[in-house]
Length: 419
Image (cartoon, rainbow, N blue to C red; front, side):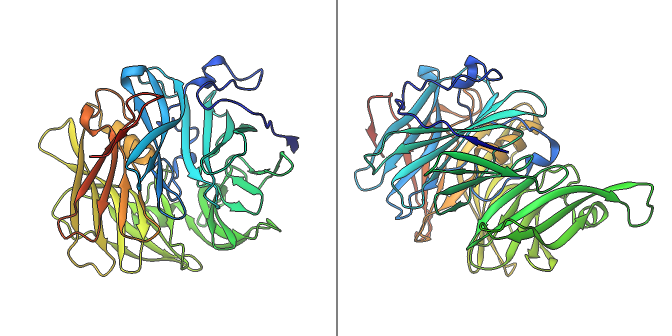
């Protein structure tokens, strides 16, 4: 299919959406907590839902919920000046989870990429992409990606194109405004940028290896080039394989690639504490890494470095309705790791904790590898203390892991210095 995306000049604080028959006025509500569209869509690829560092590391984008003003917004923190300001804001209702928002940077660092997903039903939704100028004189632009059952990121950027996964593979050409797509699987595809290629996961139902009358869900991992988009499978994981490794069969695991090598990791659940299944991107499963940390951990997104995996984590406490949001440092050689506490999170529902971690509380590494950014600022009013509704930067060079707290902006028109 092919269509022309909407491109228009709009105000970042007074956005008027295009007219679509299937999109209600609640399009204006922007919330980070995303409802699972289909079971396989609960994959999380790389840095979805977390703070985004500019390419030079001087600025950080992060979504937040402004409870006092009943709105959900995107903030920009400037490390040189210590100031944080709102660059996008819309009204929102408490516990309104019909939309999702993700923040990224355009590769040249001039504009913020904000993806909005309108959840319409159990199997469909509407996707929009906003390009908000930060170091650019270009006007704010809005692109309609169209009706799709997902527009999860990170969105691979190659030249003037930005790619989206979902029921099919879609892309926007920012120069022409054209939206195009191609089908890559029976149930959909998720893509991730990796060097000059796209790596992907797609879901298919195939006859069982042991009984042709029984269907068994298989995950196919592979790669493709952006100028060809012909899938080249690397390995598959059958349902039985995933159970042996400890990967959930309902699409809950997250997949994270090492940007410099072909390695990949997925979260493997166990009764006591999450583990990490490590794969070679070309050949498949290699081993399972158990974090050497004395705590019951629920792991979120994973960040690869040469010798370490950094992870967003929830640590179980003695209080059933409370967990500690922390940064887990997990050495790849299995040696002793460490935890840095960030904030306390509250919920009476255990499943809500998992949703928070997967969709709202990712961590991201600065380009120079010296800092980790984390933010629980999008959570509902009762889920975190008011002081913890902030952006946090952890200095990895400091043996004590100093935690810098950057409060959310006071309002749309004011900012405050970090403390």
